[in-house]
Image (cartoon, rainbow, N blue to C red; front, side, top):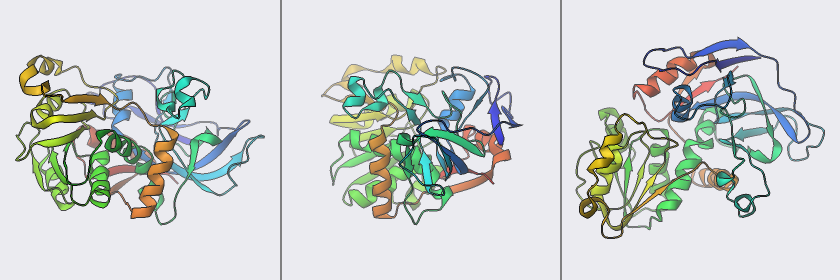
Length: 342
């Protein structure tokens, strides 16, 4: 099979082609695994973190990609969930132990033995991948493969983040950063909380304009003061500076949810500027989001089907994965980027 493979940790600023097109053996599904013939795979900021070493794969080489859509090509000897030819998706959560206190409570995202697709195990930047049947999901009808791919991570993690904010209809939500996840959260809010107002903070003028097209009531620079205090904020940026700026806009008793797997160290001095009376006093909260659980993915896919949620996508060929990653790194973003795989 063809695959785009990461062989070494590097800086995308110095190396614009970190992934190499290779021929690899087709995976063989064992036991309860299914073999997926991949048709689309979303491109996520987490891939930048993997390539540049902020969340490095435990071994190299590795096939990245964790927003996977395809069809069941073959099954292991102990499978019963899917039929050959069914369309399925694979998300960031590849597997978990199933027996720890977190798994038993439905919080596999916190499992000490959590395995991530495209980091711990080969992912979807390839023509085929295998996955345990319990960690694959049927894709609702009405979505193209490219539209469904970003839902597996950007949508599911956005859904979890929104749930963790505790947003109520009629309240103000802030979105710091406006990429694949942010634009899906905005669409969710407009359907689920019609009286809520969304305020967007983004460095890119194109992202700010895009957010207004989708229904944000206001859009400004990351460091700007919002025209109204915000009851909750979701931060999807890789930096610390937006966190400090967001806390100033948070209302008393509000909650800031950080939806990022890592934060860059280049601006960690920003944290020293947090002033307790200005940024944290009056019972403001900061909460992180760690991975996603299987229920997040299942519930979000059902919601997406119910409300007709469709992401804006830009398509690239598998061989153009490096180009898509560089565009993501340089903030050339409108919606989600997706690899189409023949």
